[in-house]
Length: 254
Image (tube, rainbow, N blue to C red; front, side):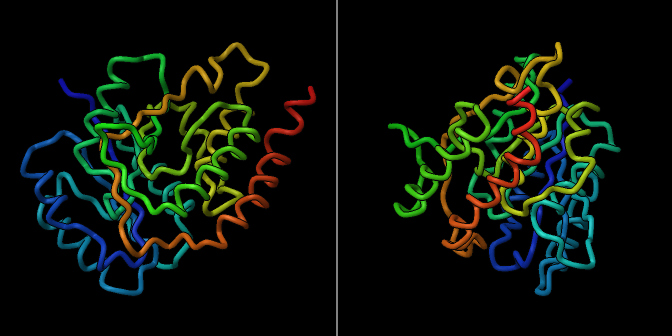
């Protein structure tokens, strides 16, 4: 029997980028995964489109409507906590623009199926021959600078924390990482890892570097309309400092 998975899709004003036909095609192909769309207080026609999906396949597409915009981090957090109540094997979150195609979900699930020692799978946008990773040059190099800083702060040799494709084992220990709101709205993926490191350091539990796996994507295409601005990269370094002082400084000096 295939493992069950619920994928959270945070949506804020995605009317022009939401690929309804891709989701409907995925539904017709009878994949076992289900989706929870979190409408994050959208002011355009996003909610109408999501309701269309819900009517199309109510067993596979559910909608959680937030009346006010709370930001991607909180939308993902609320969505994961809600999805956890359904008791799936895996929980994940995926960017609504499908820069990472839906068919990649099967690869993530298969990896967790085959590796019970793993608890988190992060998609990684690695430019390798034979793979189709399309990203603007400036964003690629800004991303590499930020990724290096993130790796140093976390003390992990992680390549890409910011790819919007993640799958997690739906265990109580993993869901505990999402009980409290995040400090940051954009670097919450880094904060998840920082919380994991803090929770396990000094214990007999498997450490972050043993339970997190980066899966190089076969395909990732940047989609116009990203809400991440160039100045967000600058602000990210201040947010990284906040994460370090909140979760990591004391544990490193113990």
